Amino acid sequence: MFNLFRKPSPANANVKQDDQQTFRVRVRTRPHGDVVEFRFTKSAHIGIDDSGNHIFRKPVVSPTHFDKGELIVQFDRNYRVTGTQGENVDFIPVSEWED
Image (cartoon, rainbow, N blue to C red):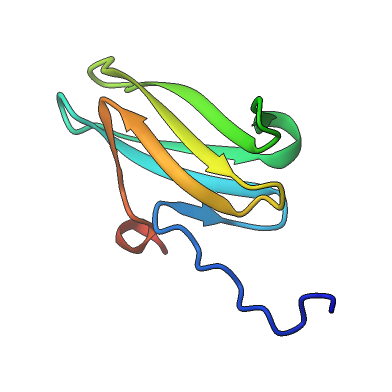
C-alpha cells in the first residue's frame, strides 16, 4: 500500500542526482584520458525510448584532444537510473569526484 515499506533502489555509482531535476555524469575518454562532465535535466535533456523508459544520450567530444565518444544513461519511468553505457569513454564513479 503506497509503497511505504519498499526499500529505495540503490543509486547508480556513475550518476549523481544534484536535486529533483538535475543529474551529473563524468567520463574519461579512452584515447587520451580527458575528463568531460555533463549536467542534464529531466525536462530539457532526457527523452523517451521506444519502450517508454527515459534515456539520456549524448555525444562526447573532449575539449583538449577532441576525442569522440558517446554516453547513454538509462532511467526507468520514475527517473531512477537503471544503467549506463559508454562508447570510447569510461565512467568515473561519483565517489572519485564528489565534493
